[in-house]
Length: 186
Image 1 (tube, rainbow, N blue to C red):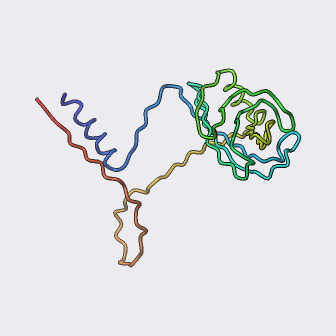
Image 2 (spheres, rainbow, N blue to C red; image 1 turned 90 degrees about the vertical axis):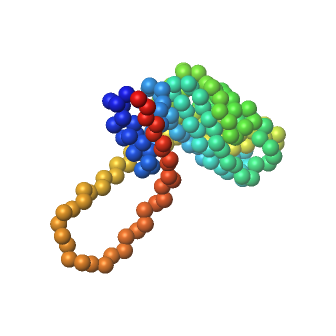
Image 3 (cartoon, rainbow, N blue to C red; image 1 turned 135 degrees about the vertical axis):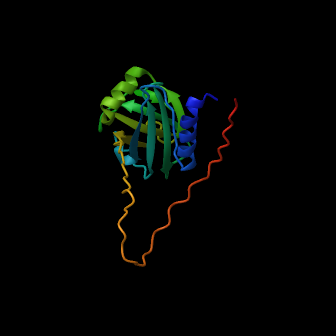
């Protein structure tokens, strides 16, 4: 190994050893999360179904992949179709993303649909169909989940000597050990 790379390799190993995680992603990649709360009352007209549920959508703005992860209870039967439609609350609209009959899958959409969904998520809704409610049993408008950033700072150790005291310190969370075996040649 080139000796100029040794400090970098050791530094990277130290980051990994203290639990650091580095994730590489393509330049410009962004993943956004949306949610929808579905119910029969949101259907147009209301379906009368007592079923309710929640869905989370992950949208990759580079690949235009849209993933759904939904849980719905009280449906009248098996899911026959699940789709994202374009339409504001109270308005029916065309299917723009088809998840077939799955509540846990990923599909590829178009850049045009993904761009419109990101710009105005409330103009789109999830509709879940069953045999009894072929026009849709439950529906919910999409909403963007705001992204948050958390910054934690740790004060530097103090060199001031303090009188002896007894205190309780909360245990630190366990960190999975990482074994690093650097190999040097040359």
